[in-house]
Amino acid sequence: TMDPNTAWLIMRSLETLKIRMEASSNGAAKVVEFLAKHPKVEHICYPGLLPESDPQYEVFKRQCLGCSSTFSFAISGGEAEAFAVLDRMQIAMLAVSLGGTETLIQHPASMTHSCVPFERRQEIGIGENLIRLSVGLENPEDLIADLEQALGVLVWFVKKVSWIFWIVPTALVGLLRPVFPCCGGIRFSDLQLDITHLPTNKSRDNASNAQK
Image (cartoon, rainbow, N blue to C red; front, side):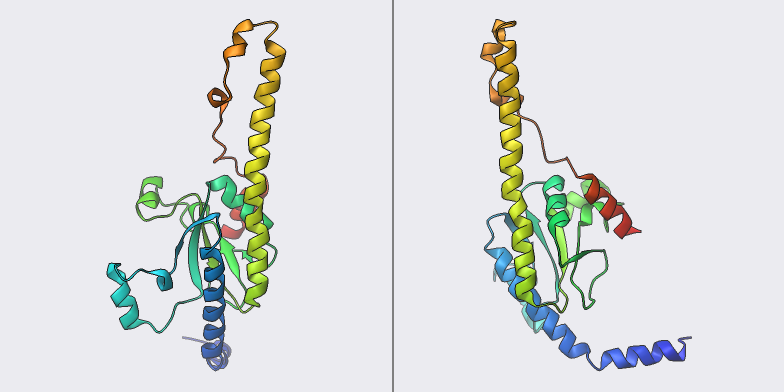
């Protein structure tokens, strides 16, 4: 049985539910519009972007007047890049909940769906580069600015790592060539490393704490 205080809180919240949902939905639409044009965003899971050829398009148009405030988007890269973006967010809080007045962001593969087998996550489209966002009541322009600076780390990330993985092998080859002449035949392409699974300690700690 619900206690009187809880019932009163629910009744009070229902009075403003409509305007809160409209505000968060409109804010999410503006954020989606920005992300859809960003070069580091590969795709967005948002009903409003469904093409007419999609089987779910007619269902969406028939049953819905608009979209909710929660959606997911995939960025270029993998887990390391996703964690780098999450680390840079200033307004959105790292948490697995949704539908509140504050904007929340999370990494499904390591948080809400971490217990789902990897193969199954791949089947349902939850990759290591997927980020889920629940837009709150903040000014959408502030959220867009926050996402823009956070996604900017991907450009730095690629340039920085590429520079490190170019200069270090090159320097080693230069040092070893006098001792081992065969090193002159080493190519950088032979020394490339996979950087998509290098999450930061901060991201892993944040993800673990948020999941608790």
